[in-house]
Length: 291
Image (cartoon, rainbow, N blue to C red; front, top):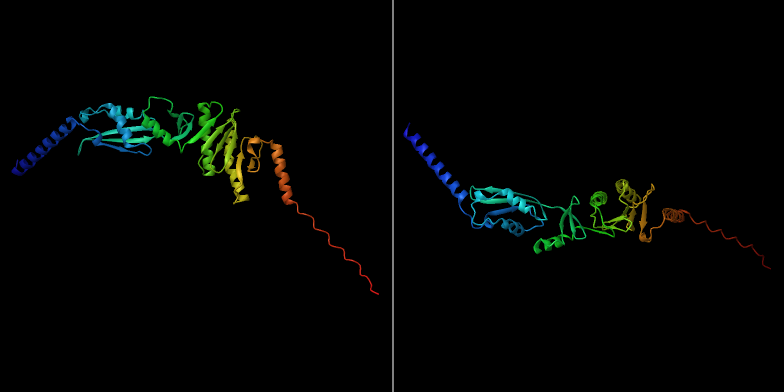
């Protein structure tokens, strides 16, 4: 074995021993402040302080990173009402570090004290007292862009899922955000955007097909009059083949019968189409002779 080979082997051995000692030191070195070595990714609504506060309940201070359980931290973070999933990874090289990847819950609506996600599942009940005031305050701030659901009667979970589906259909058709959903005592529902509102009626087996007709109705409306601005609501609650287009001068809360609405619309249309008869020409006066 040459002197050069011995030197290379010695240097490699020393590097291996040094790196092993470094890794061993980093693994078992107690860490006093885990907040300083924690990196959080994926935050939109939440703040980093909220994640750190939730993680602090694991009481990691003073523990070496080898004793940190990433799965345990992930499970604790996912108990937060606005966190859909959390992944925690430990890193040792070049320095001890925790990386947390957050996927926030996609909020959809508020129904009473319940905040629902984009699957119409309850994310949090604002009336429950076991959430800290910071979380409740944050949820109240996040309520503004949510769809507000109001109903005179209680809404079952399957109906909430149906309302979510109908809202997505209307948003796709109108390119507008659904802002409010209102149900009456007969469980007829109306879905509001900032330009139209849609009377979808009962959530029966035909409601999806009726709501799917929104695109066709709006396309026909735009082809007739591209500058139409007096449209107020579209009534999708009827079983007839026509979709009744309401206007501002028709009070939608009166719920007129279909025949009356159609008859009034036809009568109004007939008035605009019938041209007035021409006035009779004046009869010339007979000429009189002068003496």
